[in-house]
Amino acid sequence: MDTVITRFPPSPTGYLHVGGARTALFNWLYARHMKGRFVLRIEDTDTRRSTQASVDAIFEALEWLGIDWDEGPYFQSKRFDIYLEYIDKLIDSGNAYYCTCSQEKLEEMRATAMASGKKPKYDGTCRNKELKKTDNAVVRIKAPLDGTTVVRDVIKNNIVFNNTELDDFIICRSDGTPTYNLAVVVDDITMSINTIIRGDDHVNNTPKQIIIYNALGHSLPVFGHVPMVLGSDKTRLSKRHGAMSVTEYKDMGYLPDAFINYIVRLGWSYGDQEFFTRDELIEKFSLENIGRSAGVFDINKLLALNADHIKLSDPDKITKHLAPFLNKLGFEFREGPFIEGVIKTLNARSKTLKEMAENAAFYFQDTISYQEDAASKFLTADSVEILNTLIALFEALESFDEKSIENVFVKIMEQTGLKLGKIAQPVRVALTGKTISPGVFEILNVLGKEKSINRLKMAASFIGDKKS
Ligand code: GLU
Image 1 (cartoon, rainbow, N blue to C red):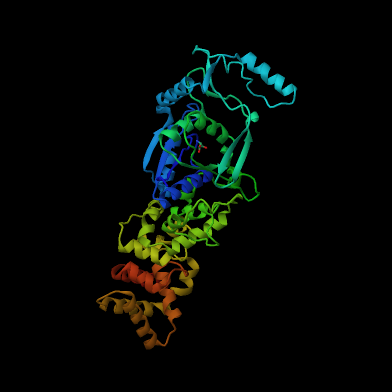
Image 2 (tube, helix red, strand yellow):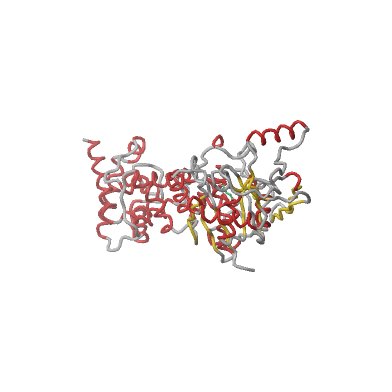
C-alpha cells in the first residue's frame, strides 16, 4: 500500500474541543502506526467566524496533546487560486456549469418542490445551457441524475445515498469564492490525503465530495466516520456536560498522555485494556478497532486514568507538566534530582498535577506553618528530645541517603524502646506541618541534610517557645 497520509482540518471558530481532539488523535495515531504522514490544515474560509485566537488555541492544544504534524499548517484562505483552477477544470471538462438562476427563481423551485412533498433541490435549468461566466453566475457541479452514491466507510460499512436525493450543488459562489465541499476535496487531492477519519456529523457531505472526486477523475480516499462523543445523559457532548476545551483539561492538571489515553478509548478499543502509554497506542492503533457505537465521556474515569498515569510515568516526564502549577503557587525550581525526588514521593497520592503541586508545597516553603491540631498533638515537650537526638545523629552522618536515615531511626528505637510511629509523627509534623504526608524517610532524603536539620531545629524551638 502507498504511504498512509491522514489529515486534521479544524475550522478555527473556537477552541479545540474534546471531539475534535479525538478526531485529530485518531488520524495522528493511524499515521504514526502506519509510518505515514499527518497533515494539518486550517479551514478558515468562513472569514466571519474564523479568528486568529482560535488558530492559536488549536495549536496550543495540539502541542499539549503531543500531536505533531509532518506537513502544514496549510490555510485554506491562502489557497483560493488553487480552488479556482480546479473549478475551471471542472467547467472545461463539462462536469460543472455556470448558473444564472435568480434568487426568486430558486425560491420558486423550492416552493414548488415543498408543495408536492418533495425535497427542495435545483431543477437543472442551466445544466445544459453552456452559459459563459457572468458577474452574478454561480458554478454548479453536474451531479449524477440517477443511481446511487455509496460511501464505503471503514467504520460504518456501506452508506448508500440515492442520487435523486442530491442535486447540482454549488461549488463556486457568485462572488468567486469556492464552497466548503469543493475546497475540502481539492485540498485532500492536492495534499495526497488517502485516509479520512472524521466525525459522523460530516457524513452527509461525503456523497457530495465523492461526486467531486469522480468529476475530477480522481480515486477516492478511505473514509471512516466516527460516532460523536456523548455526555452522561447520552446526548451529544456539549458545554452542559462540563469542560469542552482541551486546554481546560491542561489547566485542571491532566497529563496529556492520560488525556489521549482516555479520549482514544471513547471510540476505539483493544480487548478490555484500559491503560495505554503513548507508544503502546501507536503500536496498537488500527481502524478496524474503531467502534460503531458512541463513547460516553465520564470525567471520573478520566480522573482515575490520570492518577494511574501520574503514578506510572517517569518523574522526569512529569516535571515539565507540573512546572506551571508550582510556578502558579510561587515556587521556582530547576529540573533535576530534587524535583524528581519530590514527584516520586507524591505520584501515588495525586490524582491531578494541580493536587500534586499543592501537596508539594511544604518542600518549597522556607518556614513550615504547623496545622494546629498536628502541633498540639505531636510537637510536645516529649518530642523535643527525639528531635534533638535526631539532629545530633543526622549532623554526624556523612551520607544522607534513605538507608542511613532509616538506620538512625532504628538506632533511636533501640535506644528508647519507642515504636517508629512515636518518633516519625513529630518528625512528619516538623517537616511538613501536617500529620499526613509521604513517608518521612523519603521526605528527609529529598529535602537533604541541611534543610531537614533546619526544620527539625525549627520545630524544637517552636516547642521551646510554647513552653516559655
Ligand atoms: N473543518 C471541518 C471541521 O472542523 C472538518 C472537515 C473534514 O474533516 O472533512 O469539522
